[in-house]
View 1 (cartoon, one colour):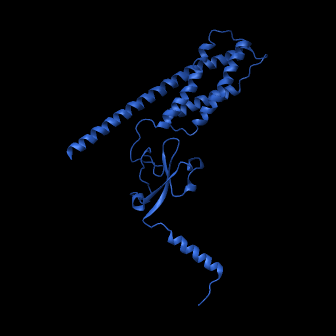
View 2 (cartoon, one colour):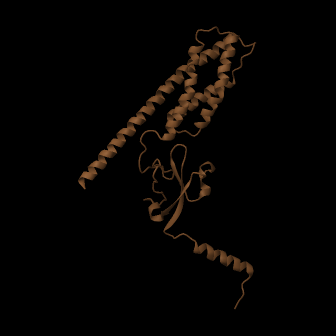
View 3 (tube, one colour):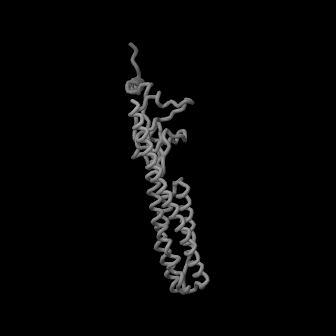
Length: 241
């Protein structure tokens, strides 16, 4: 009997071990996670998932026949609780109605920041544009700056057009805030410029808040109508059975 080299024995053992635990050809595991926008993503490997989502990823045992799309590509079936959108194909099994919970949460956070900007125009409208009030304006700028930056960071990956608009507006305000300096040598014209910006931003912030409120209310209405329609369809099917 021919004796195998120890290294060959180790290699053979590894191959046998791997084949004995191999998944059947007809099935496999996939990993699923939902990003901050409510979009469901799928990956064959855990390493293919962004680090920030790996802790929330779920492994799912799915037969290959359910993964095959009409054009031969892999598309995982929609899991419960997802948005129905697949990043693999860009299509959806079930169209999302209204805003996702994450989008609505971000809109409410954006509103809280915009609400801090709205009163500033009226606050300085009837005061002297002098150094004393200039320092007060500068103090308001500094107190809101970190809050604005935090909001922009949270909206960094937002795709909703209204959230993108709010992010751009606040980002522009931050840039101007960082360029604003008030000291004993600041002329009245510069102080008036700060007030003029407050006045303009106040109106824009109020307009964005109104749009956000309308979007949230429309979302609530759309979801209620979709739920009522689904219940009616379910009742109709039950009657026909």
